[in-house]
Amino acid sequence: MSTFRLQDKVAIVTGSSSGLGRAIAIRYAQEGAKVICADLTPTARSVEEASITTHDFILQAGGQTVFVQTDVGDAVGMERVVSIAVKLYGRLDILVNNAGISIEARTPAVLHLTDEATWDTTMRVNAKSVFLGCKYALTQMLAQEPHSSGDRGWIVNISSIMGMIGGPENPSYCASKGAVSNLTRQMALDYAPHNIHINAICPGYTQTAIFKETTTNLTPWEDLKRRHPLKGPGSPEDIARVAVVLASDDANWMTGVCLPVDGGYTAR
Image 1: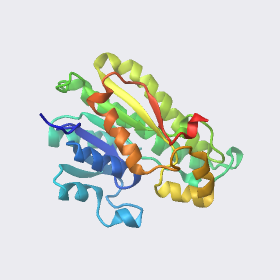
Image 2: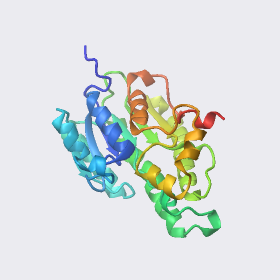
Image 3: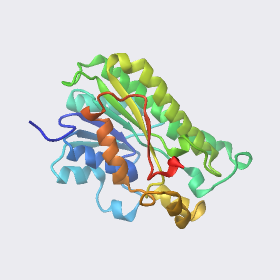
């Protein structure tokens, strides 16, 4: 009997080239999943991650993966990545809607000083992408035979604690993540009769490229460290471990959950 928690499941991870998406894609492969890495480019933003692409890292470790260039805000692109997953591996079991941006981490502003372009771009990448990804993934999950567990699929949306609480000077980001969280709950109701699990992770401040911009332009590192009761800001691996749980049989009786993984930040 396999000890891998995602053995032979087929997963798409958007925004896979860096940060949370990279950590999730690698962890999924380590747990036996066949991973479609979807992003605008295969290369990462950080120097540490840029030495080897996510899909090459997985391949070198003996995993099964392919990179698919994807604009997550484009319907044709999202439909294409689902179709490639099915063409290569015969089905789609898991979708992780991870791709996201925070323009306000670089240029924080209160709402009346926020550019319309910032709002539109943030909503396109952070919220519309979840709608599109789920639209095409759900269509496939409903059409295919159930997984051996009896379930038809697992969707993990990456929201944020900023979808639960307010954050200063980032109105478009907070609004976009609030949309992701409530869309997660809504879809969970509609697709529960089909045994499709739809949950969201709400990360706290996690050490990614966006985090570096946040600590430079918005909230200093020491302030953030004090606000996290447990161990300070998190790492991408902290989120990836929970993403495995939500795509595994351990989440057998879970759907519609927006789960903060935040070192206790929202417990106050």
